[in-house]
Each structure stands twice: as C-alpha cells, then as structure tokens.
Image (cartoon, rainbow, N blue to C red; front, side, top):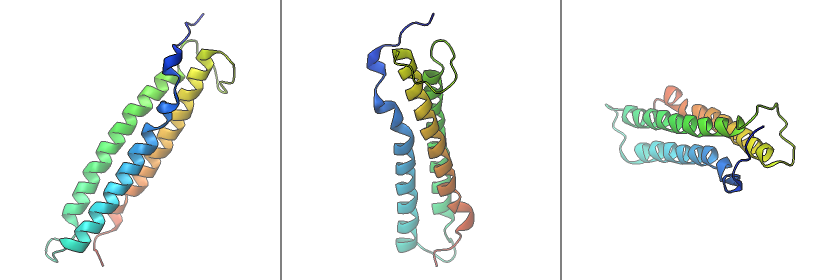
Length: 127
C-alpha cells in the first residue's frame, strides 16, 4: 500500500520549468546572435565568440532540463509503480500523472533546446 502524497505538492507548477527553460534559452540565443551580428562583427573574429556563448548556454539549459526531468521522474514513480495512464481519482494517481506530463514536457523542451543549439554548428557568418 502506498502512502498518499501531500495535496500541496500536486500543483500544476511542475509542468512549467521545461518550457520556461526552453523559452529563456531560445530568447537568449537569438539575442546573442542578433546583437553580435549587429554590433560586434569583426571579419577577423567572425561569429566564434557568440557561438561559444550559445554553446555554453545550451549545455547549462540541458543540465537544468535534466534536473527538472529527474524531479518529474521521481513524481511519476511515486508509490507503487503503475503503468500509464494514471487516470484514477486517487491523489497518488494525480501525482504520478503530473509527473508523467511534466516529464514529457521536459523531453520536448530538451529536443527544442538541442535544435536551437544546433545553430552554432551551421551558422558561421552573419551575412
């Protein structure tokens, strides 16, 4: 028999970290690229400094997504393991459903961050 999770922890805030991290990464990467190309382009340097900054920020964002996904996985595996769908009316089932949904959102955000981060491999000039 599994213990009942506290209802205070069954909030929808668990769904937000993945998309927020992705959105912040996307906006930061776009801003760095745009500002670098608009203000600091030197033909001898190229876009390498901006590319390095975007690559580092991509790694940091993926690490943050991994932490959020780990938390989501712990929520999804709470109590007795049950296969999805977690559609029971019990509090533990709602807890696992929110964990599963946030885990999927974190996976989607990680894929989006990888695609945004791929720009450092393909975009070498500002023109």
